Image (tube, rainbow, N blue to C red; front, side):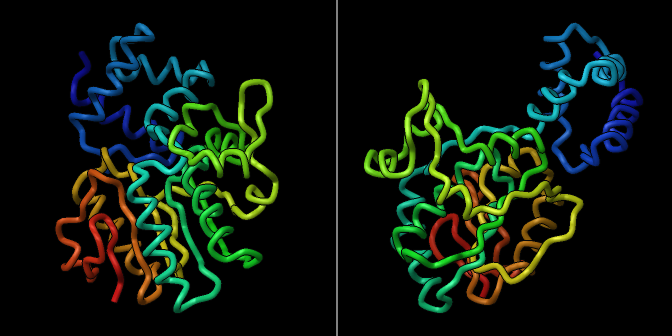
Length: 259
């Protein structure tokens, strides 16, 4: 397929165009995924593919979507969301009546909206801060609209579905009250500055292709962004093996607490 020099130039050009640094991703997986997409579009080298993207903004958008793997749904891994609702958030609310929460890599908005529903039921009338960020502006646009398919809502408990959504032409539209509780923004986890003072950070199914070094740096930055007593919630295949070195305490599987 393409040679090493070709790949290096491709990475540099992509970084210049998108601020996405492929050096932070595992090369074998990334090259395999990109090669699959290239083959689908009939490109035989990375640079030929890059030139195609320069000429075709739709292809570039598809590539960025593909790179930032926007696979998500409401209440993904329901048993973990159950722990979040019954244990983690109530624990945090004992210390702070108003929570500051960050959904990092929020994709189509399913995660921050799920949190907003939980908080609406646990603390009616309280205004918490929920920040939801993603690298992909296209996907943030979809998140802000709050319109979903049945498949994206397959883990949604029926009472919540009827409480928060109305069915329109085969799609489900989220009510304005829940939509208004989320603050959306574009953010590159590997590059941009982090805010601090969060009670809860969710970063799930985002780091799957990151190198170990990139992950370690990211988790250290999350640690610094949490209040003491704050919790980091990661995806079901993303246990942090060196959580103690970073400073976290184990709280429950896939939940880590800052002392």
